[in-house]
Image (cartoon, rainbow, N blue to C red; front, top):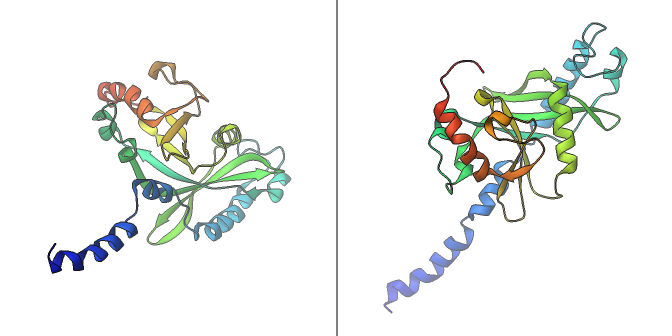
Length: 217
């Protein structure tokens, strides 16, 4: 072994130790930016002011006054699955490659520990702002699935809007991603509330994505 190789070995060892593994990368992929907490608090105040006697039920509350007791739940990072990428998906490929970070975070709004509504924050021009309020149905379905999910592992919200599907994603101890559909979609062979591997979900949906004609669903 020449002197140059001997000198390089310790350096290479340090580099290899410091490189993130695939699991470490996935574990941090769904990390919630700390600065969203303040933005969500401001958005909740704005949301409370939107609730009135005409829309309180639509926004998820039992009375207009109930909004004053609302608080923020545990957030979820939001990812989008694009149709053109899903079309090309093949069984056994990396499902993580289909997750597009759209710089959005979902905060559930709760009252007495029960999910009532939600706020979607989006990063725009370097600042997190509330861009969507309400959707009590989504909030309650997500809460049910999160409560029933296996403990541990990062959770995320995965949206496939063209096919009208939303999933609760979760990474297990092995860092493999599973997806649980919030609603049943028998036309796509997707069951509600059943966790399946992301690979299985995307493999099942890919043919439907290829057949999609571009018309509203």
